[in-house]
Length: 231
Ligand code: ATP
Image (cartoon, rainbow, N blue to C red; front, side, top):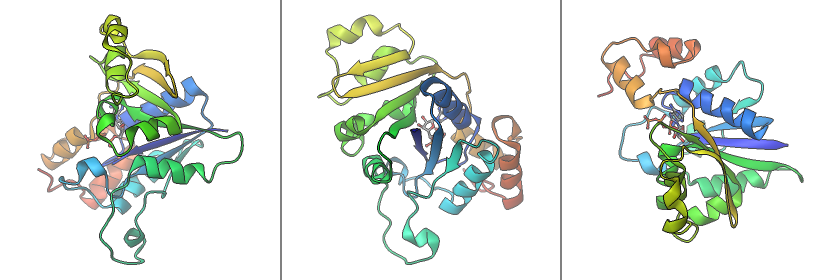
């Protein structure tokens, strides 16, 4: 089975995330996609984050109608389940991927789903080379990003030489990038400009939020008063 792992903060999950998962499912023929909310995202530790439970609940609502989309608890911290209070440890993707791979059956194939803005930072992640070699990547483009940006975001040891990537500066990020030990499938621009930051700001300013959200998620945000005090 071809399985996608889609990590993020999902604060909240929006139609851009769903568009990415749908495009990855089509292009890579994925049979199952796990949406993995990070309990403690390593790159967002300085900013306030809604509780894991709220973010997971919104994911459950947004994925309810898609059989292949499954909200995952793989990065839930023990204290989220009320078991014990300990200092939270950041969720490193490489560890999540390794842990998840141990549950796979022979013949299963894993794909790591990610947007190009997050991929652009991949070299700063924990053990980036190892992560890139653990499974194939599916990267969704955004306007203004080229194929060369994808290649140049790779850690130095995996990055093609500058002469190789130069001609691709104006080439949109589509197709497959196959390098020794690393395969990246590029989804192109999804034309879905939703942004969780913009949604939180809109709610905080009392503006409408429906356009970029699943209606059940929008209702959940209204009912719970989430993001009312966001700045
Ligand atoms: P924030 O604005 O809080 O940073 P975000 O939606 O950009 O939120 P995450 O929830 O962590 O951030 O996103 C999870 C993944 O979804 C990331 O890989 C990100 O690049 C991707 N993503 C986010 N928004 C879009 C979008 N509109 N189109 C395609 N991919 C997206």
